[in-house]
Length: 251
Image (cartoon, rainbow, N blue to C red; front, side, top):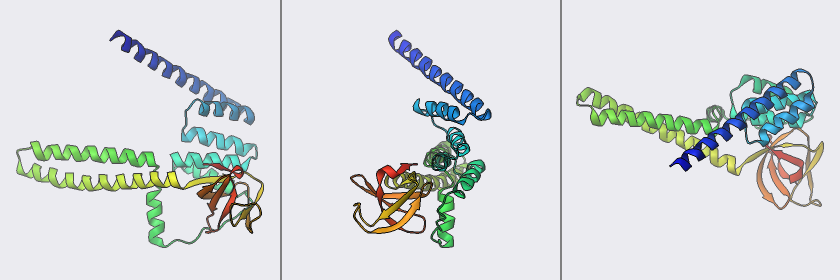
């Protein structure tokens, strides 16, 4: 028993050391950022990520540092990573919009029907982790309502517990479906940012294939397939083609 207690104590002590180290690195990086030493800020923010810690604030600060260095692809990459963790953060969305306005490509998105636009807005309201947390919370409420239905001796409370339990059960299934769909989509469709200054999109995964169109660094795309060192990609206006894996960074 003492052995397990010692292991737990060591584990908590190690976690505490890592948290303390990360906090110190972030504070130091913030200080360097405020002093205009953006390279040093980036280096220390990256150390925190290498330690296994991530957050929307950390990615946002990295994006800001790269933006100050005029490294638009890297700034957009980290703003997008920050947005994944905090989809509705206004500061992230504003800075991402500013960074995107400075890249060469102005790709017009394919128009969507109003109900699909509404659904996508609702679907992207939360990250996959937050949808999962909502599912757990709603399911716990369902169990509480079920307990009232089973344990209460008053008919009125039993009826309220039954109907509320049924409602929250439906909501929990719905939110679980959303979180699962979002997770599956994230596993099959990776988004990426172009890091090559100018790249020609090919019709097939071959350097000698037909040239389709050209995109530039900072552009966002969706990876739909992979063959050897090539990615099949789709851009916002519906254009599809192939490019080398080394040309992009996964968000």
